[in-house]
Length: 361
Image (cartoon, rainbow, N blue to C red; front, side, top):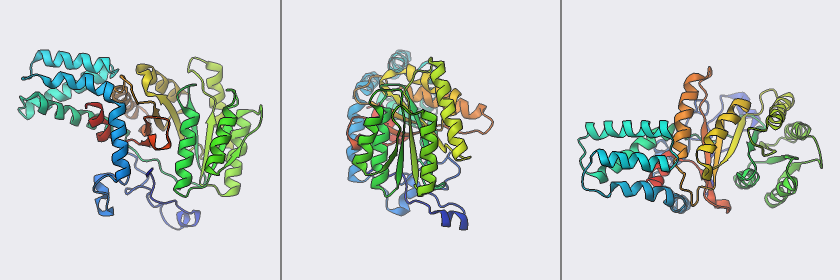
């Protein structure tokens, strides 16, 4: 069950009183871990993951097995020594955790080992799970739908990352949860992108705004305007996939964002980047480049099945923490969803502890 919001907020109730939380926490402060599967939601009967979530966890563990097995193999020895730490450092670097995040995790791990007087490598592995979970937790934040009508979500990403497919999956799940969705086929750069999105719109029985050979910014403007006029809950804007080195195309993305704001002064409310988990440190480079151009609010990480580079999320988490400390508005970066395959059920909400446990085997 794709469960990332509890209910939608009607415009009338939003005016009458402060917005109700979509997750079981106040919607405004994004630092709080989000949704119905967190410990804070135990009073809602969510003390254990439902069977559907357990199935997802099995797929996540299977997808990250290649990364996790290389790291888990370090902890088979009988004692904790410098050699073990060196092997762990190598394993983390090979998993594309990156130098800075690897140093951070090793430093945190050594502190925990020392403070808890741990001598068993198996127990040390559990401490690494805790260290990684703590590093990833700021990325765990539920996507809030319903505070604005419509909630305008702009989605970017390079070709091949799974951007349009992720939009299609998200559309399907939103529609299943009762949200009215309108799609904007603003990816006029890639052949068949419009047709691909139209298939998803038909499959999910949602509206779509598209123009053959139309200007991407104009399509986006029309879609947001139509979403407001039709009282839609969500407008999802699919933009053309491009590399951050293609400066003229990145300028087009900036233009789309500016034009969306002309249709709705507060929009886009979310700017998401879809990244391929198999690209490792290149994914981090993409996050930095797109954030500089657009000011990202969240990520969708795809294709984690079979990757040996799942550690890149640790590198992204460390960079995002530094970013939130350095930006004036202290805005965090969220990983809203992770994907491990092509099926609808293979896209799910990101949970720091689940990911850490799956990654480390």
